[in-house]
Image (cartoon, rainbow, N blue to C red):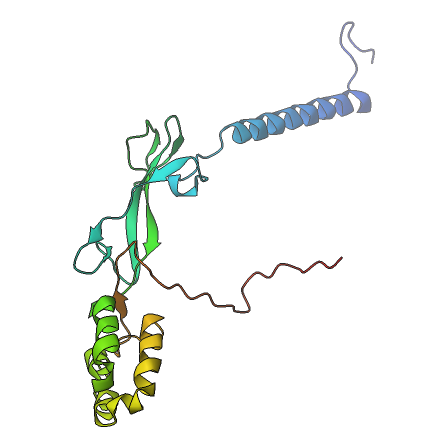
Length: 205
């Protein structure tokens, strides 16, 4: 039977061309979808901003403890303001463009647990009344305080050693708390090395 004029006969070539057209259309649709998804990247959270893209307020210090207010579990929080024209999600998960006056997130800072023991008082007692054991009594070591009292500070040697240890903040209150020291004063920070500490490779000439 002869084919009608103007219409291609149905055959393998026609079906292959239709399959190729559908395949190309599918590739185009997949590429357009991927490009649109790449162009709609989710905005960063404000606490993921880089240094220089935000500024944090100074912590409010409690005069009685000389530690940041609302210190809980050795952690306090200060509010941070993203720079103008920065777009990110704030601490409530709301995406917005900041002007430099809105709080974007709260940054955790370290604080110490104190329980009323003053560093200045401990050093003064150790310097002037250490031979009577007053420093050890004050810090909660009554047995050592009594021993120093009975031996006149181990003949002065123990008083000198205690003065050095207390001045260097090696000996602290017996309850494990920290001294009350001015927040911007002479605080001692101990650096420790563990297996997780990054070690830079030494290069030798």
